[in-house]
Image (cartoon, rainbow, N blue to C red):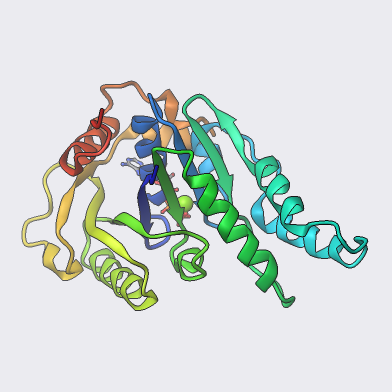
Length: 252
Ligand SMILES: Nc1ncnc2c1ncn2[C@@H]1O[C@H](COP(=O)(O)OP(=O)(O)OP(=O)(O)O)[C@@H](O)[C@H]1O
Ligand SMILES: [Mg+2]
């Protein structure tokens, strides 16, 4: 089974992690969802209320440290595959994988090759894969992930943020990632969109808006997961609506 891959990108602080976590909350029942935190700051776990013990970055370093001491014949791919499963945090309808820090100065070719294959195989166990990216999309550029079906670029309703969204879309295109569809999502919208806001500056079709929702901010301030949002909260309802427009989450 090939999962539907939804990636969230955007400038720092626009609400990527919030959107990714709300998408996951909408899809985890029945799921299963593989949540991938591709931001080295790793806060998708917090937004989902899941505790990350080990990241892929740590695993990669540990395996490289040990490779020199391993007797010949110990299969390194098995070591990595086992480690990969130890990086997964499992919960109802969702498993979380945190990519962690990027690569240091060593040669990671072999480790990356094995990991990429193992992650691809792992993804086959899920119906949805939801990726929370860092602003620069390093992780996507390193291609530890397969193709993306839907790329959601998050922006705030300001000209500066819309131009940043356009740059992110351009980066995505220059990386040569195969993306099925790309959309703009405007987040933290208070009331109506500002009159005269040139949404076309983002050069992306607008999928929809997520209103400013004080309960989202309050949960974040208290370090609580977004599962604490009531089902009828404006942000959760908006994200459900976005998925509805995409026809995601209604299959079968
Ligand atoms: N619709 C919303 N209503 C109210 N607050 C929001 C909304 N969306 C996001 N926030 C708040 O804005 C802040 C930034 O959101 P978030 O962490 O999701 O952004 P980000 O793009 O992932 O940031 P970073 O670039 O640091 O990873 C958080 O405190 C979050 O609670
Ligand atoms: Mg984030």
